[in-house]
Image 1 (cartoon, rainbow, N blue to C red):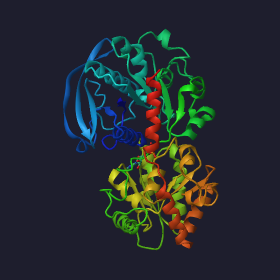
Image 2 (image 1 turned 120 degrees about the vertical axis):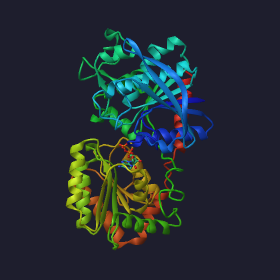
Image 3 (image 1 turned 45 degrees about the vertical axis):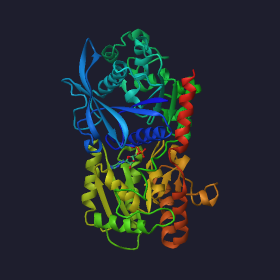
Image 4 (image 1 turned 60 degrees about the horizontal axis):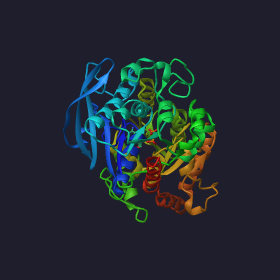
Length: 490
Ligand code: ADP
């Protein structure tokens, strides 16, 4: 099968969060299984160009219709860890992707509507006719609309679209001007509750809703989240749309790229280890302490790695930090936020705790350091308010850092409590708490810290259980192929 992924992130070149890992990991798995996969991305100015091999111009003069005229683009090609990637670079005064960050600009809805249109224009002009176009999140929600309302009539009637929602919170809301910009026009047609009209604001269109309505199949990133999106407030207003389209909607648990995230071969960690021989992990713990000037004492290291967003339970992360320091544990944090206020808050915390020998906060994005933290930490907290799938807990399991998670969405699908799960003991792999308050977090952290201090053998057993889990792309890769086959034959 010929599959094209259209996304705004791909690890490790353009990564903000889990979306990047999924695009990379799924594409690799599909290729290993004998499919032809290509990835189309924006050519951001701030990408990791050092991770792209043999970057060169692939298509010089791509003119993408936009409002009444057209924007001139150059398309580059390069390999990202062996994957074929195309990067679209528009030349216009808006500098759509020539900016300091990836997201968070007032014209994001125009930037990514343009990207969706440019991706289709590129496929059209180069005669590429994939069997499947797989789009991700709100940024590419308009792509199936453009495909089935415009490009289909230019000869692209073959591709089918699979649309994956990684986060319902960000849906892409825009006004009528996007319809004119992309050439869709006809507001009277699209401003309809069965098509693009936003459920809250009748004079706005909703990109994610567009993706759900127009795609041949829609997935979200874990079975539990698929349920929550339909039946709880986690669908952020799209529950009814999902109900209408329930026959083409399901949850597929994300996988983890087990080659990229492998403590046995990881180039970013100084000592290697596996489930059976874990001496390397204790040496990595020492290395992590050296790196962060932490004291060498008999305490577990508890870590947080991730975006510093309300969704991630910032109040609980902060509380987890102090709880660790009061209860015989060390704490390490690596994270950043697009909001200056949140970053400032954590910078203040960092200065306040500057002299603590048991704590280190690293504010920013640092892929290499993330690997060292997963390898060196004994435990990982993931106290999210909601977490569609969550990769950090899976990475933690793979690296022997026991996850302490809140019982929501994908976390519920992947972490099973050591004391209370109904699973057999050999399948229990972490600590789980339910409520979104300090006492609940403390109850789980207390159990974890106590086990570490008081029963080393049992704690080791728990670590080994986690490392034995298989959250690779093996199973989800097959699920996606089944979905592709299903829609291809329609
Ligand atoms: P989300 O997609 O909501 O951001 P996930 O848990 O699905 O959360 O994925 C987070 C991914 O991003 C993981 O691979 C994690 O290691 C990585 N990550 C998040 N923040 C940072 C950071 N500050 N530095 C390095 N890696 C990070």
